Length: 193
Image (cartoon, rainbow, N blue to C red):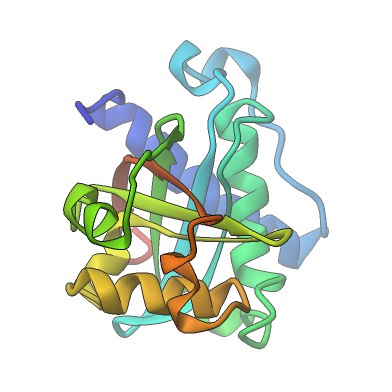
């Protein structure tokens, strides 16, 4: 995926994500940037994930795959979701905000991956490039392309993703499994300026 955002647009979104979390502490509301401050590229609807880490460890990650709202609004909502609503973690405390690294991953559209066998699926996936969505029996789960760093082996990656969907690890081998792929443009800010 070719870079779609300028350095200033990336910086704007990263600052907006941190400002949204900060504003949550002071007022419980989402900031409303002046429309003239928001570049046209950031007003387009896009799926995105916001990932928070502290000392290199995951602290929260929330996102959406399908475009629903302008990107700048989704970034603010997902930043607050990652900080306060990721059920895997206690809510972020004000004292730790400055130590949080923020990564924004803007998604391309999803494409259904066609394959005739589990072996062909493994061959068609592009580790480190493709984000993957598994859908089966009303359950859905996704891993961003960055998760390939943790699970570089495609079998382990898909087993873990099936487990995340609350399916048996080998469920991705089932002929009824729907697999979608997407790519991301991701950018990060290590900590507060």
